[in-house]
Length: 519
Image 1 (cartoon, helix red, strand yellow):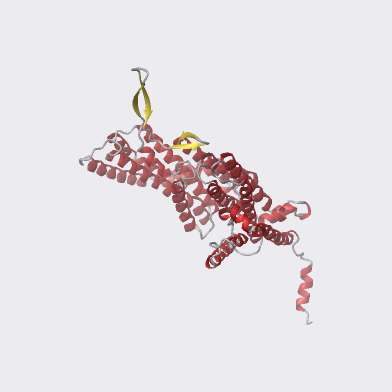
Image 2 (cartoon, rainbow, N blue to C red):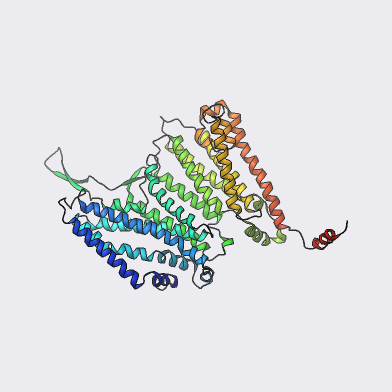
C-alpha cells in the first residue's frame, strides 16, 4: 500500500505534523486526566463490575463512533469532493488499476481517524491492566472494530461513487441512518434470527467478555473429579441448528460483504457515471442467493412459520428492490446497447428488461425460503406449501410491476427520471394506504382481498381462511399485477423503438419549408 500513489497522497494530506501533534497532545491529556481520576476513587477496578471494564467498554464504543461514523463520512467525501472539484476524471485516466485506486481511497480517506484511535491505545492498555482483562479479548475487540468499520467504509465509498451533485448531505445522513439501523436490526429480529450483532459497536461488548471459568464436578462412581468449562459469556449463534461462537461468524460475514462492496467499486470506479452498473445480472443473482443463505443459516424456525416467511420475504423485497434499481437502463445505456446490435434491432429482452431477471431472482429467493420452511416444518405448526408458493409468486409479480414502471420512466426524457419515478411510486402507495385505511378496508375481512390490487398484502394477510372466503379476488389481484407489467412493457417498447429509429434528418428541410409556407 505504501507504493500506492492514492494512499500516499491521502497520508501526506491528512497526517501533517501539526495535526498529528495536536491529536497526540489531546489524547495524552485526556488519558492522563481519566487515569488520575479513576485511580483516586474507592470503587474496585478489577472484575466485570469494576471501573476498569467500564472504561474499557466506553473506550471501544468511542473508538467505534470515531472510526465507523467518522470514517464513513470521510469515505463519503472521498469521491464526491473529487467530482465536485473536477479532479476525479484525472484519477480515472491514471495507470492505477481500478482495485488499486479503490484500495487507495478505502484505506487512505479515513487514515487520520485510524491514527486518532491509535492515540487511545495506551488508555485502553491501562484499562485492561486495571480491570485484569485478558489481552486476547482486547485484540479480538480491535479485530471486530477494524473489520466492522472497514465494511462501513467500503459501503460509504460505494455511496460516494453514486452520489450526484446536490445530494451530498443526504448521502451522509443515509450512511449514519444505515449504521444505526444495522447496529440495532439484530436486536429487533432476535426472535427470528439466532445471529448476534454485526456492528463495529459490538467491539465494546467483546472487550468486556470474560474467559470461561473452570468448574469442578464430582462423579457418582468414585472420587475422581472432572474439570469442565462453564459460565461462558461469549455470544453464540445457531448455524443450521448448531451452536457456533459469534466472533468468527462476524469476521467471516464482514469479510464477505467487504469483498462484495469492493467488487462493485472496482467495476465502476473508472467508468463514466452514465455507464455505472454495480453488478452484472449474474453477480446480482449470486448476491441475492448469498444474502438469503446467510439469513436461512441462522433463522429460528421454532416460531410461527408464516411470520418467519413474511419477515424473510420482506427482507427480500428490500434487497431485490435495491439491486433491481442498479439493473435499470437509462437512455444513454440503452442507446449504446442498441448501437452494438446489428442494424439497431432491439431484442425481446430489451423490451422486457428487467422483468425476466427480477422474476427469476425473486422466485428463486422465495422458493429457498419456502423450501427451508417446509423442511423445518414441525407437526404442531399449521403450514400450507401452496400458500407459501403463492406468496412468493405475488412478491415476484409486485416487484416486476414496480421495476418495470421505473424502467419505463428511465427511458423518458427529463431531469432525474429515476427520482421522479420513485417519487410517483411513493405518492401512489401513500395515497392508496391512506384511502384504504380511511374506509377500514384492512379491518374488514370481506374487503381485505381488494387491497391486493394495490399493495403486497398477501405477504402478510393471506392464509387458508382468507383464501376460502374470496379466492377469486385474491387470484384476480395476482393476475392484475401481470396485466400492469404488460402495459409498462408496451410503453417501454415504444420508447425503445424511438431510440432505435429516431427521426431522420431528411425530413427537416421539408418541415422547415412547411413552417414558412404562407398556407
